[in-house]
Amino acid sequence: MPKSILILFAHPSYARSRANRALRAVAEGRDHVTLHDLYETYPNFLIDVEAEQRLLLDHDHIVLMHPFFWYSAPSLVKEWLDVVLDYGWAYGEGGTALAGKSWTQAITTGGPAQSYCSDGLNRFSIDELLRPFQATANLCQCVWQDPFVLHASRQATPEILADAAAKFSAMLEGLIDG
Ligand SMILES: Cc1cc2nc3c(=O)[nH]c(=O)nc-3n(C[C@H](O)[C@H](O)[C@H](O)COP(=O)(O)O)c2cc1C
Image (cartoon, rainbow, N blue to C red; front, side, top):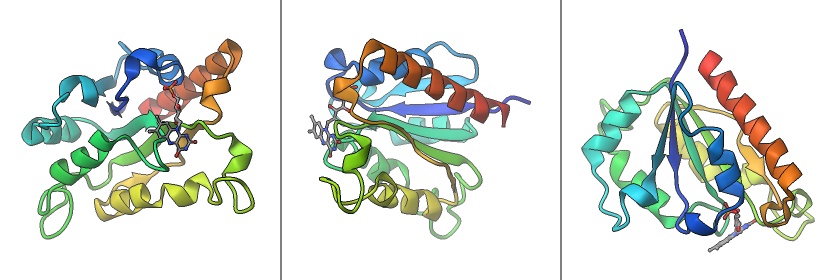
């Protein structure tokens, strides 16, 4: 039985995107994948909490897909977390709605891979910087997956983007196949 994936896509200036555009192309229109563009749906940040919670309930896997912004996500993702992952629904007493679903961050960074280590420019690894997301997934009893990361995305050649898209596609297939 194929599993279903909900991609929560967040890019505030998607018209100018190269990296996320290349990755997103392999998800769009794909069987068992719902690509949900948060900035397109909520340009005014007024999130329909019930609709978001229904979408989450309808899928097995959650993928948060976004460019890395200030070692985190674009701000609509934070708003989404704040209002959708409600006490008593996603966590806390009786809050088991997301228990057992998987949670994957799919990010593109401006910085190269070697800048994300203790003696590199960014001082911390991607795994360390994603800890708040991992902790959130943990509190919601989701299963944290290794993140998908495309580094140095602004310098990526068409070949590099195509290779990353193929890897992202394989990751999605793996999730669908369980
Ligand atoms: C507001 C802002 C903050 C950013 N913060 C980071 C950051 O913390 N680390 C990093 O490696 N790149 C950072 N970048 C670079 C973006 O991650 C990069 O431009 C993006 O991944 C490119 O993807 P795209 O082609 O889909 O737009 C930042 C860019 C912007 C506009």
